[in-house]
Amino acid sequence: MPHTAPSPAITTAPTADTLDERNRDPRQATEEMRGTAVSADASGDWVVLGHDEAVQVACDADSFSSAVSAHLQVPNGLNGERHAAFRRVIDPFFSARRMAALEPVLRSVARDLVAALPHLAPVDAVAEIGSVFAVRAQTRWLGWPTALEPRLLAWMDANHAATRSGERSRTAAVAADFDAIIEEVVTAKTLDGDRNDVTSELLATTVSLDGEPERPLTRPEVVSILRNWTGGDLGSIALCVGVVLHDLAAAPRLQERMRVARRPERAAIIDELLRRDDPFVSNRRVATCPVDLGGQHIEAGQRVRIHWTAANRDERVFFDPDLIRTGSHAGHNLVYGVGPHVCPGRPLATLELVVLVEALLAACRIEPSTDIPTSREVSPVGGYARVGITLRPIREEK
Image 1 (cartoon, rainbow, N blue to C red):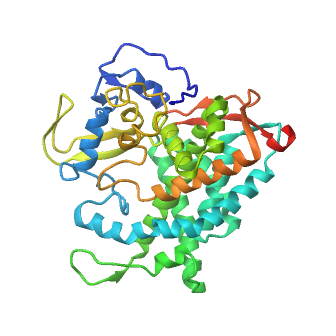
Image 2: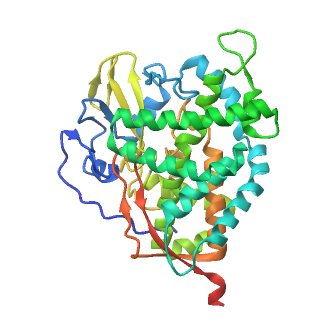
Image 3: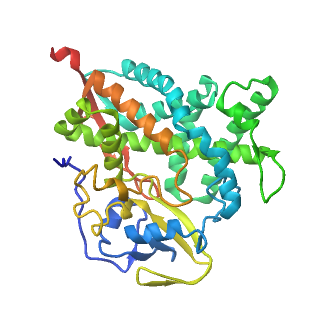
């Protein structure tokens, strides 16, 4: 039977000619554009809001290029065979075998975090659970020093603030700060010669591009890959945790269903919660040729943004976007993208979220708390800025 957990009230307004998300929750802003598949935004770029149109853009890498940045972005800022070559290098790091080997490590991280959380007291699910777990899980996976935790947590706050500001100088500064962290780690790994962790293994990895012989990854390529694996994922996992715990706290029946479900169903429910409130808001593309899409004509060279949050709530595909249907919705879920540039780290993100939720549900009931006011993020960030919850130990109920 489908379950529906309460979700934030959305005020529907008449359809506007232009999508304007500035200083607004991107989910609410796009709800006001229901029925519009492709729109312009306030900067004049095209925004793809419809589900089928989002799939078309994401799957047509020839017409919609991912090379949108002046900086090296490996792998998903590349196209064609170069992109495919790097995916052949990167994807094995997220294989089922590797995730199975990593699971006990992540489970230990989750259990230790949950054991240290206060009971029957207000907790911010984003900052105190999501952010901390993301940093600890990622550093353990990559083999980075635990001493980096305070620095990475501070960087996450600075990165979110810079992203919200929209100021290029601020985003460039925090990006440079993160690259400096990566450079320090890589330099240390290179000097000590330890090859028994993922970062060291990446340093020893080779790639073949354009038919040339295998060669080691360059330092900029290694830094770019590690930036992709961590810089974006730390904040994203924290936001995902906020969405999932907010919705579970608001829906005790769904929480009980999760508590007794098998692992695949838990993962499917988490995917559905993220589909209906997708914190991975958008990805950029640039048109390489004239294209007609969703009733609009896009010229070559124009910038295009796939709005995953809106596409995952398209009523043409999800009749009632807030309804949780783990079966019929799964094949249309775009939380991790689709097409050749689909997120390579999906297996890791899914494992991290499932393991954390399992640790919480094994120990506690998750309840809403008004002592920490819950608030939404604003574009270009999605999900929640803060989620107030209370953890009630199950053992006290017996």
